[in-house]
Every structure is written in C-alpha cells, then in structure tokens.
Length: 343
Length: 257
Image (cartoon, rainbow over all chains, first blue to last red; front, side):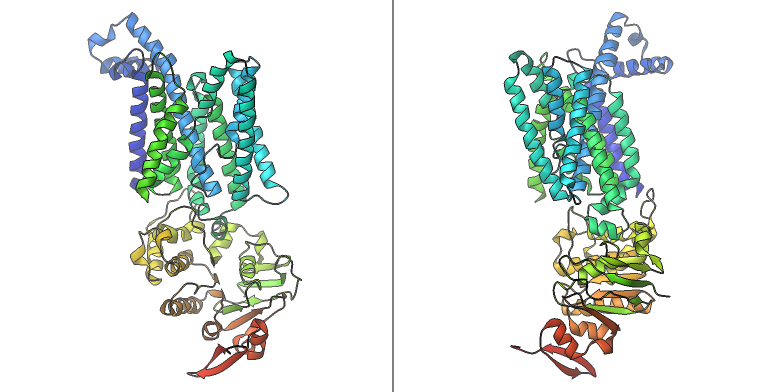
C-alpha cells in the first residue's frame, strides 16, 4: 500500500529536484551541477561538507565563484522556488476544484478568481504603484471575487456545484470585460507590464517562502482529508451516507482552493493550464486516489512550472517570455494527446 | 430494542399535505418493504431514515438516539444506503468502489488494511462481480453497477440496510440472489428496509410492509395484514388478480383496467 503511494511520489520528487537543478544551471551563464551543489551547501553553512565533495581545483575560483554564487542564490534560486511553489499551488487548487465541482474541466480560475486578482493588479499598475502594492491589490481582488461568487451562488438556499460553476463562469466573463476596458484605457507605456502580468510572469515574484510554506502546509492538512475527498468525488449523497460531513468539507475545499489560487496569482500573475492539465494528467497516469493525486499535483505542478519558467527566460534570451505562454503552448497539445489516447 | 424508529415523522415532500405521521418501529431481523406508486415519497422516506433529508416534523431514532444528534460517521457505521441512482463523477474501479464502504471505520490517517480488502473482495464475490474488480464502474452495465453498489453497502456492514429498489436493472436470477442476500442479512440480525416496485418480491421476501400513498397517507404492519388486494388496488389505482402459486399469493395486474 505504502509502495503504491510511495514510488510515484519518490519519482516525482526526483523530477522536481532535477528541474530545480536545471533551472539553477541554465541561463545567460551556465553553471555546472557540481558548482551549484557547492554554492547551495556553502550558503547553508555546510562548508566542510561541500569542500569535501569537490576536488581542490574547484575551491579556489575567487571572483568567478562569487558571481556564480550571486547568480544562483540571489537570482535563480528564489525565482525557481517561486515557480515551483506557484505551479504546485495551482495544480493542487485545480485538483481540489475538480473534486468540489465534480467536474474534471474545472480549474482554479473557473470561479472567476483570476479575474478579480487581475483587476486588483492592473488597478495598482494603472495607479503607478509597484511591487508589494500590486501583490496586495491582486490578493484583495482574488478574495473579493471569491466571496462575491460564493455569496451569489449561495443565494437564499444552498449552493450546488452547477450553480457555483455557472455563477463563477459569468462573474469571470464580467471581469474579462472589465480587464479589456482597463487595457483599452491604459496609457501605452504601461501596457507591456500589464499584459505580462495577465499572461503570468515570475519576474514579479520576490521571496519564494510564503507560497512554498503554504504549499507544504496545505499538503500536510490534505493528507488526512484524502479519503474523504475520494468519497466526496462519488457525489455528496453517497459521501453523506458514508459518514462524510459534506457541507463542512466542501467549505473547507472551497476556502483552501481559493487561498491557494490567490497566493499563486499574487506571486506570479494568472498562469493558465497548470491547474487544469496537471491534475488531469496525473489522474490518467495514477488513478483517482486523492491521497496520491494531491501531493503528486504539488510536485508535478511545481516541476512543470520550473521547467516552463526556465524555457521562458532562456528561449529568446536576453528577452523573457511570460511563462503562461509556455505552459499553454506545452499544456494544450499534451492535454489533447492524453485525452485522445484515453478514449 | 428497536434499531430504527420514527416518531410522528412527516417526510418533506414539496407541495404535499403532511398526511399520516409515521410511527414505525423496526426491529433487528425484520425485512420491511415500502410500496407505493411513483412520486409517493419512497426515496424521500428512505433518505429521511438515513438522515440525509430533514423531515418536515417528527424525528428518527437510531437505537433510541435521535438521528439528527448523532455524528455522520457513527450513523454510517450503523446505517447503509443503496441509492437508486448513482453519480459517477470521476472514474473508479469496482474494487475501489466497494472499498469506500470501509470509510466510516477508518481514522483519517489510516490506510485501508488487509482486513478491509478481504471484506470488500468477499462482498464482490457474494454479489457475483469479483471478476470485474479492476474494471471502471463507468464501463459496467446497469445491473452490474447495481450489484457493485450493493457490494459497497455489504462492505460497510451496517446494522440497518436501507435499499432503494435493490433489484433495479437486475435480471431474474440476480433479483432472487439479491433478495436472498437481504434475507440472509436479516437472518444474521440486521434490519432491512427496501423500497420495491414488484409486489410479488415484497410478498415473497418481506415480513413487514409500509404502504405509502401519493396523498401522504400511509399504513404499515405485518405483511399478511397489508397485502390485501383492495388496499393494493387503491394504492396503485390498478385492478389486480390474485392467483395462488405454490401456496403463495401472486399479484397480477388485470389487462385493460
């Protein structure tokens, strides 16, 4: 039983580490894996261990080493970790939304959350604010949209998945119109930044730790809920008959998925397809046990986004592409291929 | 001591008068058949007994404790429900589907153990679907799915079976096999409540009958006092002929009436 869950997760973990190593090594200056290892260990205060692992020639590199250190530790590592965290958050949020709405086509943005976040971020950019203000404004927009959709779908009675979905889609369409309006009215010099944000762009991200910690925390919280989620995926009545407190669990999923998505969008703008494609691919490969799928989503989503971001900043270097373009370009054909094969 | 009882229970069927308050006492080992025409509220009654549907008034007690006060997990260890229709949101195999019957017994951190697998596999075997264990439920026929659903409740091993048309979609052989399983469960001390459309299955396999009229009226009691042609004709608004076969009454609708 443990090996059934353990082996795929172990392989995904290896893939995740490999992708991070790749992201640290590739760029305008190539850095060898051995050197990355030394730098990372050195930075963690494990000098002795690092030097023992390396030959004598590699220690005395002087200034080149310091430059590589800055490049790895201060530029590439935070960005790669941010990409990992955002990809993981989006994939887990997507998997949760799919269970909540019992619809495999749901993604984290289906309830209009990214639209709300986008309007928050664009408004901050239009106002000439930068950095933290954009993130804060995006986060508020995401939460506002979440509560709006939930309040409207809840109405006077209870909410059902189809009602929630429909409300979300319509609210998202509304946000889409407002976004287009804002873009049309924006001064031309602000447009590129806004468009990059809308496509998802990791160059805005600063410290990777909040989303990473959130990802870790949510994975720990979700493990004991996994089997209940499996039962919920069979439908609310069946779940209730098997002892699941359906409404509290659904609230829990809704809040968790919204929080994860809001954190992801705040860090990197609205990156599409990760939340839809990753859970779906993993389901086709690993079956539908949420206890396996959710941590696998965290690892695979992270890996995918790290690789996509590495491509985005190297393909047409020194220019950078918005990473959302890459995820969509990679995600669409992969998804269609898997779907075609599965029939 | 009764395992399931209703106290002045009025089920909540939208747009209907309240009708007869139900005061039913179900003992371990009893086999109850719920009969009534379409829309009489049989499924609503079953869901109300399971605590999935709030009653308009009155209450349901499980082993003397009010159902609405009990935790869902505890209720699920005592009450199993075979649904009439099933939603297949996500693909799942037959074995996985049977295994979710163990959900009420496992703590959040626990994985299914060998014992849970043994129970699920025994239930699949009993329902004659063990050869399908690795198939996706969505690829099965209606009757096979019905048997998987019953196997799930068997894996759940409840003290009270609430079965909504358990013979739905089943061929003649499997209808008898499922009713025999229900009788076997009752003989082991479980209580069984079934909604049925087939009068003759009810006559053959149930010892207590509840008649549910579309108006909300109801009457209940031992089988022989309930399966009276005049009452059944009023229930279904259908004239019946009663014939004796092997010493048992068989109800046949009269043609053209």
